[in-house]
Length: 534
Ligand code: FAD
Image (cartoon, rainbow, N blue to C red):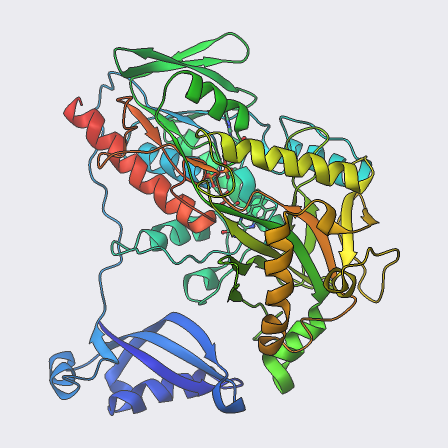
C-alpha cells in the first residue's frame, strides 16, 4: 500500500471527487486505483478558505513505478504497518493471575490486553458498574448527594466515562499503540470515524455502553472484574509485592499487580506512601472552567463556515506564557458541553467538563488553568500537591456556599477585580448550581495575575474570548496527578518488584488515549515479567 498526504479538497466535496482526486494526485488512470482508505482527515482554514486535508492509503497498480516517480516527495510513502502484535502468550496452565487495580481507560486496556494474551487478569475496582455509577453521579449533580465511592472519578470506566471523550493525544507513539486503542473502541461500539478524524471524540452516552462491551470481552477471555472492591493495602515481602488487601478485609494474592488508580485516589496514595512505595511530587495546573456561547467560538474559529455539519462545534487550544513565569492555557476543551461537579471527597468542589457525541449544548467550556510546580508552590513530601489541591477544593466549597454549589464570576468582573452579583447573557451549566462571587479570594495571587494577563492574548486568537459575560466557575484542581509513582525501564516500581504503577494516577498519562496506551505497555511489561519469572 502507498500513503499519500496533504491531499486537499473543498469542504463540500463528494465521495466521487475524493476518488478522482486520489487518481489525479498520483497521475494514474481511475481504474488503476484498486481501492483506498482514509487514514486521517483534518481541515485547513488558511487564507480564509476552509478545506479538508486527507492522508489516504491507496491500493494502486504499479506501486513500485509510482514510488520511483515520487522519489523525494514527502507526500508519498509506503503505508506503515500499524497492526498490533502481542508480545507473548500465556502458558496453558497459569501459575498465577495478574491483578489490575482500577478499571479506568488504563486498567481497561491493561486487563484487555492481558486477557487477549491469555493471562486471565483479576480487576479490582472500588466503584460500581457503569449503569449504577451513572445514577450515583447524577445524584450529586441533581440532588447534591455525593457518593464518595461512586462518582465522576470512581467506578467502571474511570474518570473518562463522563467526559467529552476526546481521543487524541500528543504522546510519541512509534508503535501505533493509539491505533490499537481506537480499534478496540470501535469494536466496542465507537463510531468508525474515530479511526480517521484528526480530533475524534465519543461523548458520554456511547462511552457507557463501550465500557460494558469491553468488560464483557475481558470476562469472555477468562478475566474477572470485581466491583466495589477497594484496595486498602499492599502485601509486601522483601521488596516484592505478594498481593493486596481489600476494604472488606479480603485479600487477593498475586506477585504481579498493576496500579491504575487515576489521579483522585488520594487515600490509596497515602497508603502507598506509608508502605514506602517510592513516589515524588510532580507539577500540575490549577484554575477555573470558562464558559462562552458555543456560537461565539464557532464564529471566531470558522467564520462564514460556522455551523457547517462536517465541522461540528468548534474547539480551541490556547497558551500564554505570563510575565510571572507561569504558563496559562486552555485545558480539556469541551465544545457544546457542560461543566460538571467532579469531586470524590465530601465538602469539596472540583470542576471539569463533559459533552455528548452531538456536542450541541449551548455553551463551550474549557479549563482556564495556570501551571504550578512542587519546587515553588507546594514544597514538602510527595503528597504535598495533594494537600494543596484539598485546601483549594475546600475553599471552593465554602465560597460556593455549601451543597456542592460552585463559586462563579463573570469574566469582566474578574478582570476588573470586583465580585459578581448576577449573571449576564451566558447561563452557566454547572449543576447543582453556582454562587456569584469573587474567585480571586481563593485563587493564589500569581494565578489571578497570570490569568488576567492571558485574556487579552487569548482574545486576539479567539475574537470575543474576553466577553464580559463569559462565566468562570471554580475550581479546576485535578488537571493531572499531583505525584508520580516512579517506575523503572521494566515498568515496575523503583523499589517494589512486581508492582506496576500505570496511567494518569501514577503520572504516566493525561487523557483517555494516553491512559489506554499506557495500559497496553503495562500489560506487555506484566506479560514479559510473568513469562520470564521476574
Ligand atoms: P482513571 O480513569 O481515573 O481510573 C482509575 C480507576 O481506579 C477509577 O475507576 C477508580 O475508581 C479506581 N480506583 C482508584 N483507587 C482504587 C483502589 N484503591 N481500589 C480499587 N480501585 C481504585 N480525557 C480525555 O482524553 N478526553 C476527555 O474528553 C476527557 N474529559 C474528561 C472529563 C472529566 C469530567 C474527567 C474527570 C476527566 C476527563 N478526561 C478526559 C481525563 C481522563 O478521563 C483521564 O485522563 C483518564 O480517565 C485516566 O485514566 P486512568 O485509567 O489512568 O485513571
